[in-house]
Length: 423
Image (cartoon, rainbow, N blue to C red; front, side, top):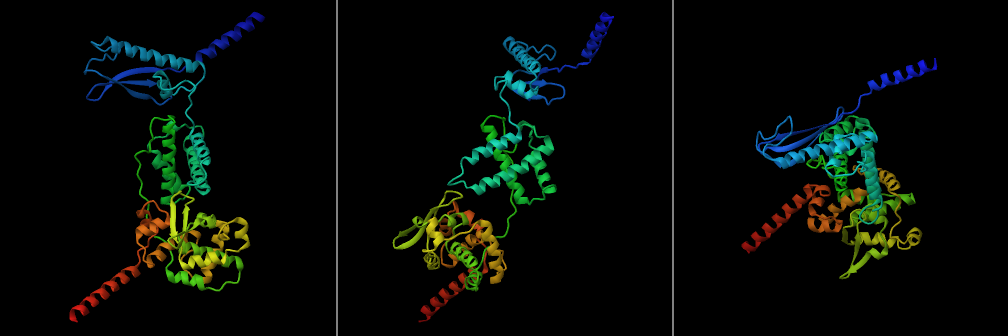
């Protein structure tokens, strides 16, 4: 009775074993193109094929597609046989050890481009490694706010890739069409603006460049992508708005301090992060003129700004301020969030139509400098921009006042010439 039970179990196991379907690996060769270049293709059912050139050129009709012999070239025939044997050996080793059977990985190992244990990071892992590396660079030239912005981009890409490909999708999953897929996702699901989604795509492009540098992937599928941003109107204040802000009566002390910091940025062109870290050491005297000489926190580009009387008056006002003396700074600057909350109230009190924020002051400096007679190139240098074109694109607002002023100057000069000729 025991023998019959054992026999029945063994027969059942054999029946189950017959149903097991083992993976198959097919290696084929063919000729492509007018120059008859030999190609190899590795195919495994259920996986994406991997094809690549062998860099061998033969004449049309020399390859036997049944035996893969190259007529008249025994060395090439032997090489094809060795390649096929190498691919099959790698396939069997990986199948036995339960590793990934992706044809591209198998072909890479057979060609000596990688080892068995060289893993291609997932999309999420690549994002994490890139961010970890960037986090170590926080300091002059790369501020915390930029890192936080990159973190937000990475979160969007993580959500997209998880939804589209799964959380374990590797970098080589991405194809050139990912540009359109992620843009469609951000527009329909995240409701993001056109310019913001361009920044996310550019961020992903940088991640893929990083992956290529570490040889996780062969190419950046977004390398040729070029996208145009929608140009937004430049928002800055004219001098009438600045005067209303200067003259409005305020009773709250903190609001008055916020106003002074805002006005100082308007008269100096300093960004929020730079005015917050401005110390007396950054104030230098050049040919009898007090100036700010400071590397920008965001880019490391040096700003050189002569201080106008309005700016000097504000610095003098806070030279003995308790907070400034304790922190060793020039002005009592609040956090960016608090500053913007107070500026919203300040704009309402001064009846200014434009929305006030810390960056509005820096942009308004371009108007102030222009009215003082500075040229674009000089304003660009004071703002710490690498190129005047950046100042022109993002800081200058086409104003009718400058045209009228130039027209009156021309008329005045013409009148003087006519009077001289008449006299």
